Length: 144
Image (tube, rainbow, N blue to C red; front, side, top):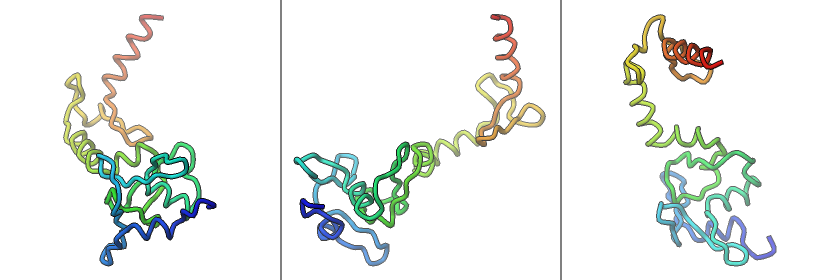
């Protein structure tokens, strides 16, 4: 880059954790704990995104970076993976908690059991209540 900023410049502003390999950003952090840096025209950008861009190129459209190390202020590009927003949420603590809560549910919102012939697992892996699907289909047909 012609502005003098590159991956080495970013890494020089980190402490490297020898046990994890994390590049821990020592400068400004956003309120949510992610590293930020001023880049071109003093625009603030996520330092981990810039680090990834310097090493691998632009994050593909429709994807965001997931910290595989789970450390928000780590900017090591080898600890970052482009994933969909849904995948990123499911990998995080909140996603794991929500998934566990949903799996613990024994009945759908209308009280039908998630078991036996009433249970269908759709291609995305979600549990579907067959009784609710049938009810929705009947309501749709009556409106037609």
